[in-house]
Image (cartoon, rainbow, N blue to C red; front, side, top):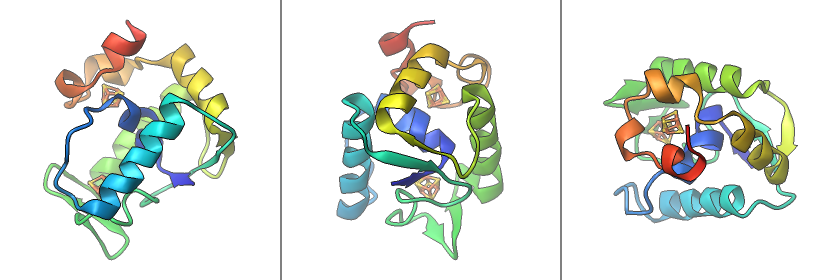
Length: 130
Ligand code: SF4
Ligand code: SF4
């Protein structure tokens, strides 16, 4: 599975409701939640740019995120905050289990506390604390 940093961190903590991005997106989102909440040996490659969740997303076009709340450049800044906070590198592959342990040792990140606009909807504080 190829995932960009904020999908590795954030998807598992977000609400389970329908995001309105279609069946294929929902299936991939559910798969990420399953593998990050009850982790196994699934290998996850830390990806720069669009990933396996972006691929079925209606906001993805020409290999870029075109979301109205933040385009590819904005999303890459978010990814940079997350990758720095977790201490992982692009191109690195880790098991879901190892990432789960790492996230529980590092999150909520400083970015979660100070900057993230999705903080009110995110369960990271209730699930991990901080
Ligand atoms: S294309 Fe943008 S909005 Fe869609 S999943 Fe990727 S980062 Fe998120
Ligand atoms: S607070 Fe923001 S950056 Fe932190 S886990 Fe939640 S959505 Fe991700």
